[in-house]
Length: 141
Length: 173
Image 1 (cartoon, rainbow over the protein chains, first blue to last red):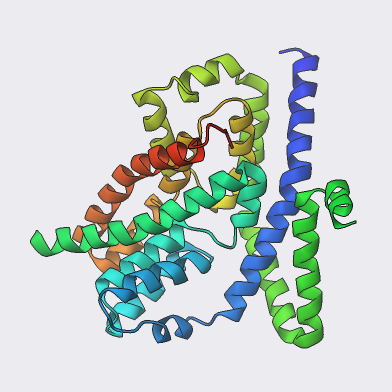
Image 2 (cartoon, one colour):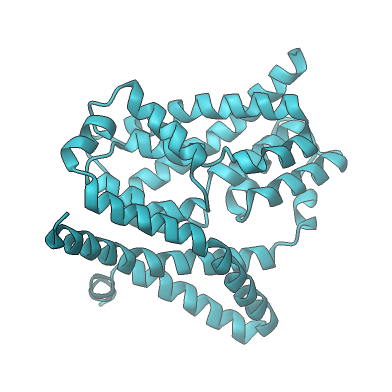
């Protein structure tokens, strides 16, 4: 491998870092703020107990929440114990890991606004659909 | 005036500066919340550093060895089953938060990777193998198995639909 190729690869990396590092710092700062602003107890309060509305609400809250997926499993487990329906909990967990409202500005800048909006919108719908299919499959198994 | 500022700074810096301004406002309203936020930020930053290193290393390697023509044959518009399988597999095994992968995906997109494969990769980021035992602990084995199978299957459908919708007006993202 010649020096010219190495230099060109390093320049490409530096250019990418110039764009991505400030963006990542911004995303991390927002996630840190949300993690502190929304206490885990908040999540149990937003569910209505209605079988049709709760999955939509769960997916909506999961889309806005940010952080480690493990946190979503723990909160999901707590929600089940508090009587929140399985459908709502699955939609909540799925949206937490597949939809990212907090990361949307960063995703738009790096991958395109149209792509980011469509991907997050489709993933939101899929969170509700997969939750429904998972619960139905588990009930019939 | 605003347009000129946006053009000069670029969307990236506008976003980052806006977040900084938000923190300054919170410092004025509730300094403790801002301080807690900064502490969490530092802790998160330390956690993601190894994964960030891996992503930048992969980016360097892709700049070094990935030729556009070769990449296009696997991940470009003419890709068949192999491209989708690669997107599913790499999405599942990739580590770290989703936003860490935006720089690499943005680079691969510029080299010709199709939107559907990017969406499929990002969807499979939700299948976290190291966290599966924890999920089994909370929800049971049968639940995790059914959910994981649906997620992997729907990830390809997700990629397909996203690509169709993104290209609906004949424009690439």
